Image (tube, protein in one colour):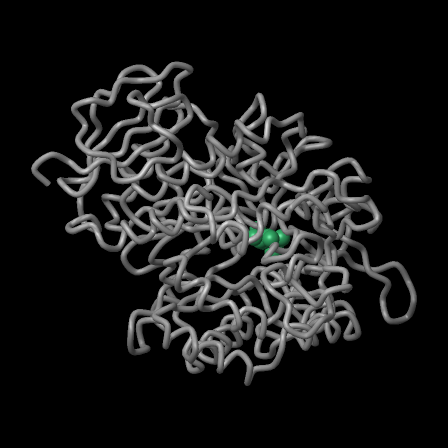
Amino acid sequence: MRSFADSDGDGVGDIGGLRSRLPYLADLGVDAVWITPWYPSPMADGGYDVADYCEIDPRFGTLADADVLLAEAHALGIRVITDLVANHTSEQHPWFVAALAAGPGSPERARYFFRDGRAGGDEPPNDWISAFGGRAWTRVREPDGSPGQWYLHQFAPQQPDLDWDHPGVREDFDAILRFWFDRGIDGIRVDAAPAMAKAPGLPDAGHGPGAAFESRTWVGNPHWDVDGVHDILRRWRRIGDSYPGDRVFVTEAVVNGPERLSRYVRPDEMHTTFNFDYLTAPWDAGALRRVIDGTLAALAPVGAPATWVLSSHDETRHVTRFGRASTGAAFGGAALPASTTDPVLGLRRARAAALLTLALPGGAYVYQGEELGLPEVEDLPEDALQDPTWERSGHTVRGRDGCRVPLPWDGDRPPFGFTDAGVAPWLPQPAGWAASTVAAQLGDPGSTLALYRTALSLRRSLPRLADAPLTWLDGGPDVLAFDRGTALRCVVNLSAEPVDVTGHGSVLLASGPVPGRLPPDTAAWFRVDGG
Ligand code: GLC
């Protein structure tokens, strides 16, 4: 929301900006938009610190604006998914303000995890750690000014975790879900789903000093992917199912492997889930094929469709990752050191990855700006950085701002149509983005925007594609080649040499020139002979 388009000249994206660009999204060919949190928020974590779940932050607009947005999006055939941040509130949410004021042992504190410290109160109650670095506990001053209890926050200290065993928390969120479904929201993205349940008694996790928040490696962790989370998800699914139309849920669940992930999409739980194994996979044929096969194999038994995603608001943009020596990613953009990138190579691979992604069976998420081939902005001035990771890491990890730089729409200098001329966007844009603007790319049939538009249009229009199974072909070493039934053949060359693609049929779309053989880091879609 903050980085898409600004309508009121304050340098921050808003609902009006999104409304004005709905025709762009319709032309791009998306089925739905997922809007990151738009609720009133002190913005300690980009809006993922919510102070009121049933309002819109005035920076973004009003509830009336949201209603108009929904109506206009629906008129264009675009569904709207909102973000639900239920593991934690903002420290400024009235529940937390009341909990602080009410003191130890109060019913208000029972909505959160307030505990006495160890070692006479001076040490945190256990060894749990925060996703943004450091420990997951902060000590409060009690109303009488004395050093007091500690509260749990698996993210920033401004994001206290709610206790989902508290019946009032469950009931209040039932009402919040209904509030948005009643307004016509089509779906909900469940933020940080695995964080919501905790092991009884809050036992130590066994994290050593300096342990990193690497939830994809954790087994039996007491504060992440605890089985109780599924009770909450089932409860929400029942609410969604009580509404007319297809209300959908998608979870964000960074967990240990496809089998744990598949639990989030059992038939009575969520419909889909983001696929972080795919997002973080390196540009390597074997690794990608393992993730694709692993995903499909894990989801088939629970009957859930796969999803595929290359970038997000939490991750280094893949144009930049794919141009580095080490092309994989660590979730949150935190753990892998940045290194020099080859932007030309990165973009070539990103375009090929787009055709791979959009050819796979299931849903695909496009992170705003990836359709423009935008790179990570790696040289944001330090005083512009807003991600809590920057402070929490003692200024050693820059965090996620580099993928959140406002989009360039038109013109030859910042703010590139994102906001009014002369206004500074909330994060500075690179001066050199003129060739990346939507306006510049719309006139260029070879642009990345044109590639995405054509690919998304073919995805819709190719007969029998939606339900077609994936069948691997032998394309040679470091080549991914597969059919989607008789609808489409996709060949991606991840090797260092051009590969022969004669016999694959006629090229429908390619990520780069195909002068006879398919060049390295290039993908092509073919019409399957007889299809
Ligand atoms: C999710 C969001 C991320 C946020 C975190 C805490 O991971 O995608 O942006 O910082 O949850 O709410």
